[in-house]
Image: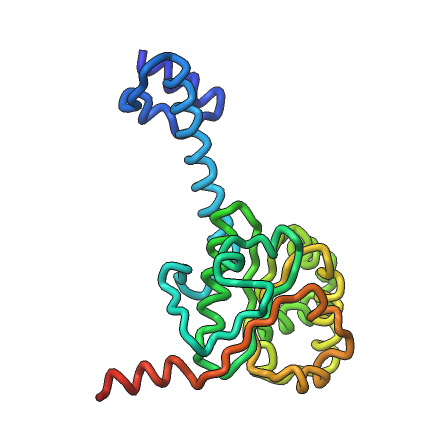
Length: 233
């Protein structure tokens, strides 16, 4: 019987129920079927999330549960912590921009939100901006621009980390701006920057990046530095 179940599960591409069906508690046949289908659904969603997390290429393992919210984080009036963690801004294809000094926790939150998005079934890409600009320039030079852009088009969320940390040339800025423009109202951008908005005209001359955007300001000094110093005392 077990071999028949295994073969049928393989034929029907049911990857998760063959190993657990004997352990499922139930009160009646309908309840058993419901629990069985839930096991398969949960297994597929978990596997999908793991694929998306791997594809996103996050630099570190960061979660919202690990994130330390502190008084120097200024959320906009229409976006509280619960709303942010619900990821409804992604459903609405809105952007999320975090600005502040280096070491204040901007990238941690970006990574954590990206991981949560993968767990909810969103296709996410993470890039350090300087590296992305380099890839965009190389794709253009090598004639692979179209194929590179198609990969980005499939994403629901693109995370751009460290905008303004390193300067890049006019052509790189134009390619990045083109990417951001084409994402407008098509997908969500999550961006971190150490630049004040008054400095953004050094890179962009268009306001579409901040249209439909939630802006989170980090007003304190470096959290990493403060935490490191506190451990020395």
